[in-house]
Image (cartoon, rainbow, N blue to C red; front, top):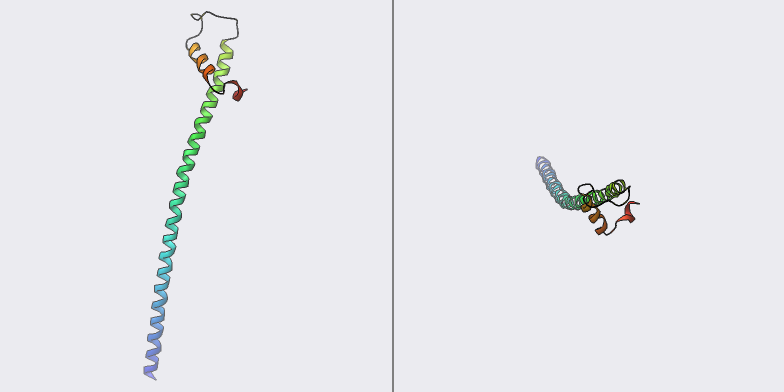
Length: 108
């Protein structure tokens, strides 16, 4: 009887050890899966940051164009002025407005 009890206890101990090993293996697999997922998220975040920066720049350009239109409209209220009588930087801004691809269509 004692031998049988000892054998049963040994079997239970072996089963417990095997279950622990299986649990450890599952945890390792889960960790590996988590690591793979985080790499993808980091890549997506980088792409999203790039997109955000891109659209911020577009927005800044758009705002500058709108400000340029209002400035030109304000400084050109009266009739024709000689180039010497125009405000400083007026010619530069006028040329940048005329050379822009989108010009009036976006801001109006």
